[in-house]
Each structure stands twice: as structure tokens, then as C-alpha cells.
Image 1 (tube, one colour):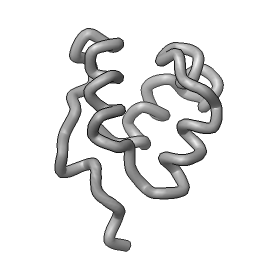
Image 2 (cartoon, one colour):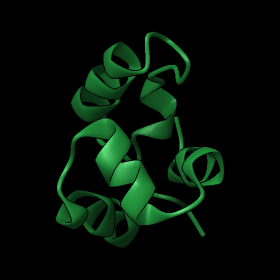
Image 3 (tube, rainbow, N blue to C red):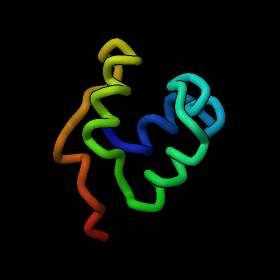
Image 4 (cartoon, rainbow, N blue to C red):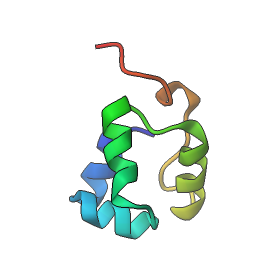
Length: 64
């Protein structure tokens, strides 16, 4: 899963953090490094009952 798809779904960083039960610093860290770490993706997949799928290939720095 990618940061952008979570943001697009929840609409705001606050809503995203609240819905996923994460701290505001978490998404700030993801944005800084450019991806959501795979173990965190697995937790999000479970919390969203599979709505968002964890993908190892998305858990790597952007090559831009």
C-alpha cells in the first residue's frame, strides 16, 4: 500500500491517524522516508480488514 492511497481514502492526515489508531508522527515519518514500512502495512491491512493490502514492493524508498 502507498501513502497516497491511504490519504486519498481518508481525506486528511488527522482522519487517517484517527481511523488507523496511529500517532500523527507516524504519517509524518512515512512521508519523510517515502513509504510505509512493510510490518506497519501488515497492521493496517488487518485493521482495515483487507481494504488496503500490504505489498513489500511498496515498502521501499521512492526512486525519484
